[in-house]
Length: 95
Image 1 (spheres, helix red, strand yellow):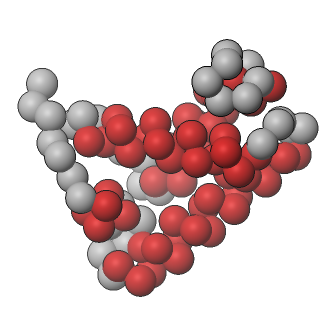
Image 2 (cartoon, one colour):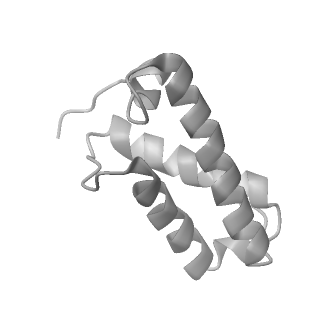
């Protein structure tokens, strides 16, 4: 597998080709992910939203591709995995 080293701008381009719109969409999705964890009574919902992005972007840098039309679905899938695996119940790094 070829490891691609993508810049932050390239990674955000999955949300929109316009950098300003891409950042807006990223921040909007961040808030949706944080609310998802908050609604599920998770500890540190913003940290968990950030963890979902961290894992998703790491996967993209390793060559993984988003197969859905909406990148939000990709990151929500990661968030659901974090929640169902119990990581949302423990501080990051202790589970």
